[in-house]
Length: 478
Image (cartoon, rainbow, N blue to C red):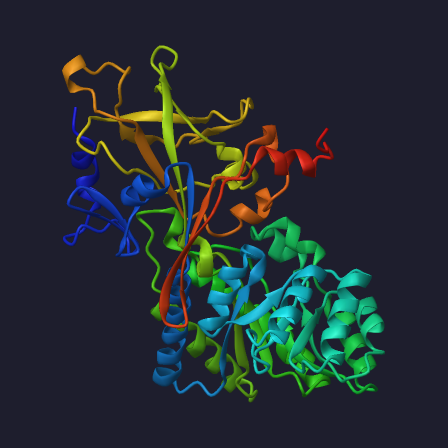
C-alpha cells in the first residue's frame, strides 16, 4: 500500500507544485508559495477559514497583463475593462483587494450598490471606475442606483433587464450611461447554456423599442451585455457565442451609435477546483481580441471596448477551509471508512449540494507518510445525512489513520488535519455570513491575511459564539 506522498508524487511537477498555488515542500503543504497551512493550525487551531487576499491581487494583475499583452500583439484599439463580480464574495477585505488591484465593480442587488456607494465615499472606489449594475431591479435597487448617480458618481451603468427598468430610471436627475442585456434564444438553450439565464435580458424587438425610447432623453446607451455561463473551458464554444452576440451588438448599434462597450460576460474558468486544470488564459485573450477585431473589421464597425466579469476567477482560490478529523468509523463492508470532521461540510461548502458535480481540492496537511486509502468525509456538527463528501462517483484519497487497520506500532501520532482549497468564491455568500446555520453549526474562526499600505497584515475573527446565534434566533438572555 503506497504512502500518501507516493500516491501524490505523479501529480507533482519538478518544483513540487500540484498547481500554481499549492505545493508540497519538505513534507509540508505550502499555499500561494508562502503559507505553511499546518503551521497555521499549530498557531490558530482547527477548524479554520483562511482568507489570503494577496492571491486576489495576483489573479487580477495576471489577467489584466494577459489582455494588455494581447492588445499589444493584435493592435486592438478598444480598451479592456476588468470587472469584479462582487456576488462571488462581498467581504470587505476581498472587495477592497480587488479594487486595489485595479478592478471595476459589478453589482447584483440594492445592498451591493449601497456597498459601492460607501466605498466611493470612503475613497476606496475611485470615481474613474465603472459600477455595472446587473440583474433584475426591484424599486430599492433602482433607488440605490439613482441615489449613487445623483450624488455625483458618473460611471454607474445600470444594465437594463427589461423595458420597465428604464422607465423607472428615466427620471434620474443626472444623465445615465445605460447597458442592455441580451436574451438568449431557444437555440442557445438547446446548446446547453444554463436554463436559468433564459429569464434575463431583452429580445431584439425589445431592444429596438428601448433604443427609440432612450433617444429622446438625456441618457445614453453605452454597453451591450452578453452572457454564456460559468467555468467555460471550451474556447471554440465560447468564441462562437461571442460571434452571435456581436451580431446583436452591431444590430443595436445601428439604432444607438453611442454603444461602444461590449461585455463578453463571465465564464473565465479557474483552476481552484481541479489539480489537473489547464487553460491558456493568454492564448484565449489574444484569440478573443483577434476574433472581435476581425468580425468588426469585416463589417466596418469600430472595435468596441471589451468588458469581462470575473467572479470565481478573481477570488475562488484565495480561500482555504481547514478541518480536524475528530473520529474515524469503519464503512460498510467493501466501502471506504468515514472520517468525521469538526465542522459541517454543507455549511462551509454549500456548493457540494447546490452545484451538480462540484468538487474541491482536498489535501491532508500531516501524516503524509501514512498509507493512502479512499475515504468519505462527514460533518460532525450537523445531524444531516447529506453532510458528506465526496459525492457521486468521485474518489477521495487521504492518509489512513488510527482505527482503520494499521498495526499498533504504525499508527500516526496526533489528529489528521485536512484542507479544502478553492473555497473563496460563493461559499460564504451562499452559506451566509453571521446568523444561524444548519443544525446551528458555528462559523469557524477566520484568519484574514492581506496587504495594506504595503505591509502584510494578519487578523483573526473568532469563532461564532452560541450567544450570537441564539440572539439571532430571538432567544434573549433570561
